[in-house]
Every structure is written in structure tokens, then in C-alpha cells.
Length: 213
Image (cartoon, rainbow, N blue to C red):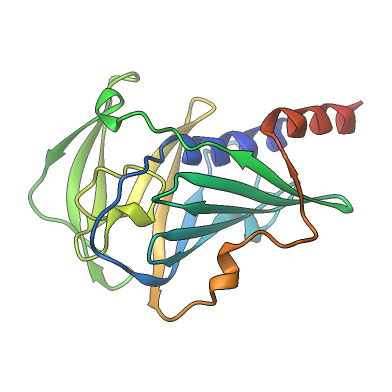
């Protein structure tokens, strides 16, 4: 159960970092992030180590494999609407979520740094991100040629986060881009299939509690 709660916490930590910030630059394609979990947390399988992000203009689809099944996060950026699609046993769920519209100004402070590093063949820039609540500063990296709106973390960076860290359950989880592929995507990737049941987040928590009993 602890592992299940950790993965849910990671997912909703990602969502809570999102803002409805709209930028002019558009990208269409696929990103793959490698996820490094905190030491002491056993991965269930290699598939939980990766996050796949599909971006099309102002739409996002983020896929994660977790111990309780595949989770898909779909967001329409300008409308600030989002759902989590999940196979929960034999039931297919679309969990309604409301991305946090609060400004990141209250959470993080950014400071430019000189230099950077090559990540997945792309030249990135370094940036110092200070978590005000935790009073912790971490060096991260971004790619200035792709908008940060295609990430749900640190959307005030001056480009797509390429290597970053998220605090989840008092542990820092590392995300690093493994590949970027620019290609045309099917619009149906960003819709809710008709066989999914739409529920609220509170209703989903009730299902988890019933499963545990």
C-alpha cells in the first residue's frame, strides 16, 4: 500500500505544479523522461521508471506505469481542464482534476546560471530553482527552444525542463529527458474514450479504501 500511495503522490505532485500559462511557441511530438525514485523504494518493474509525454499545440497527454496500473493524464492547457485515465481492475476510470492555477511565484524562485550540459543530444541551460517552503536550492536544466508549457512542472522556466526534481512524500524524485521526437500526432490521443467512467478524485479515494479492506 505504501508503494501505491507513493506513486499516487508523485502523480498528483506533478499535477499540482501545473499552471494554465499559455505561450506562443507550439510543438508537436513526444518526450520520454527517465524517473529515478528515491533510494530505498523498490521499483515494481522497469516500466515504472519512465514517463512518456505527448504534446500537440496546447494539449498534453502524460503516460505513467504504476503498481496499480497505467495512468494517463490529459490536459487542455488554455481551458485548464484535465483528467487522469486509469484501468482500475476491470473498470476504466477518468478521474476529474483541476490543475492548480496559483502562481509559482509563491513556491519557487529561479536564478540563471552560466553553462549547461548536453542531455539526450540537446544543449541545455542550467538554472537554480529554490523551493521556498523547503528552503532548498537545486540546479536543474532546461531546453530554451521548446516551451515550458509542455511540462506540468516548473512552468515558469524559460524553456522545457530537461532535468528536474519534484518533492514527493518528503523525497526528491529525479526526471531526466531520454529522447525528444518531433512528429504529427493523432488528435484522438488527447480525448477520453467512451468506455471510461468519469468520477471525482474523492470518489477515486473511496475506491482505493474499499480495495484495501
